Image 1 (cartoon, one colour):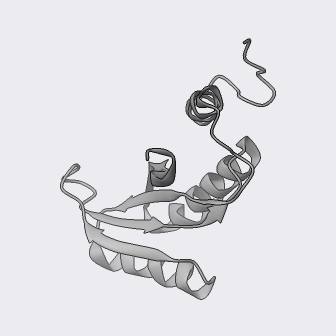
Image 2: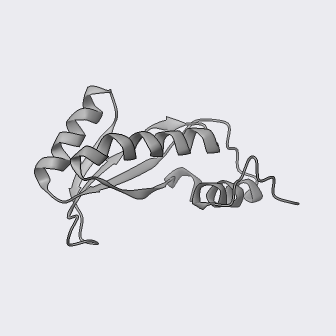
Length: 115
């Protein structure tokens, strides 16, 4: 099977989707995706969390041990069909809205696909 780069571009999102596609798992039905953003201070992370809550987003707030300069993590849990447009648009939204608060996007994960 050859990879359609219009559906699965050659970047981390496209690579993720291509790997899932090859397993035969369904990508069209909505799944919960975890998107993490790191912050240098607890106050900035909480400000971002408030912004997400005001937009009815499910989230978690935790200390983060993997980066001394960014020790606070906010994770958002939107449900969406897994396609390039949805994942990249949500990532861009988080990056843009967290930038004024010195947020650093830390990636995404879909636990339901790992089972």
